[in-house]
Length: 203
Image (cartoon, rainbow, N blue to C red; front, side, top):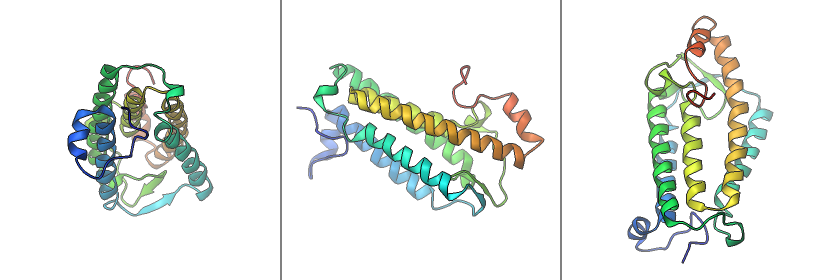
């Protein structure tokens, strides 16, 4: 019987159940990722510039709505697009791959990372690791993971939520690009000319 919500787990035997059902394993991956991300966020440089609060609020609200669409109604049977256990497992693999890329990009960025559009004290332009090819690999990785979660959910709402989150990330991406171009007027245009913003060979 399918789970009623992505983040609901039993009090006992969760690890075993997670390995037996793609939905449960998907939940476990997100929980572990969120924990690692939260701890890593404690070790960042102080910001010397931060985008206006109004922008952060609008972005935060839209992003929250997107994530609610991804997770809360994921398993309503009346919106199920397909019924394939194999596709659900494919979704788990895609989600895990996205998280591995996100962690690689996050730790490559180091203490320069921020959840908002900011410039840090002693900010450096990172062009190594995944940043050699894509300027915003964390966003790429997040969208890959969300796509995997939508595949596992096999319902309409997660795909809609992923679309809304993608739109939010595109707006934020453009703000970051303008900020970086101003902070690194010589380096950033050259870096931008030889890399992709989000998806290699596409954008």
